[in-house]
Amino acid sequence: MNFKEYDVVALTEEIQALHKETQQPIRLIPGQVGTILMDFEGRAYLVDFADAHGKTYAMETIPGERLMLLIYEPLLAVA
Image (tube, rainbow, N blue to C red; front, side, top):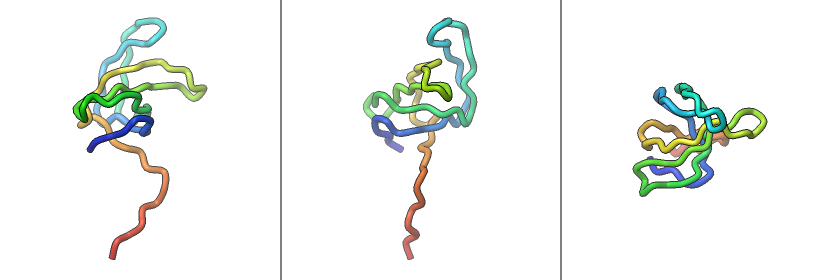
């Protein structure tokens, strides 16, 4: 699936990252939510991970196959 800028996504696999401020290693686990900031030709995406207060704790380039789009609105059923 191709994502676009500002899509809200969740990880489908665990990845290792560095905390943006402390540079300490952290784990980003399946279900962790982020926002697409940049599309690298549909193959990988720069994703911003922020806490509940909007403060970024990680920003990583992630292959599209490790992400899923979060959908907040119902989709119409096609008969």
